View 1 (cartoon, rainbow, N blue to C red):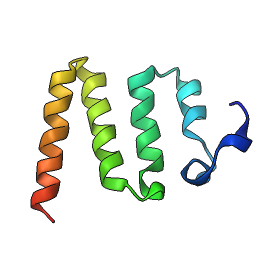
View 2 (cartoon, rainbow, N blue to C red):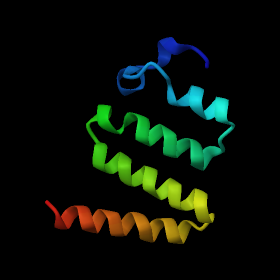
View 3 (cartoon, helix red, strand yellow):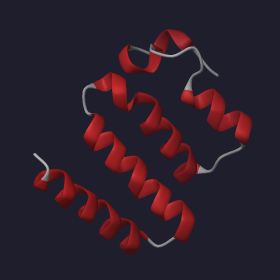
Length: 84
């Protein structure tokens, strides 16, 4: 996995690192980012933003359409603002 001494903070909160899962499952960049953002979102202090980023990458992974992913993320942000 590389030099684990370089991993700090929210990257050291679980026994299994996102990079290990990404490598083991052979995920591409977009699908790997879904895992990365979901793994760190409860630990970094930016859970809502990280969840929306994971949602964006999931929508993009499913469709390969960045404009669609943008719409999904924007709608999630709007719903989040309405519930505050």
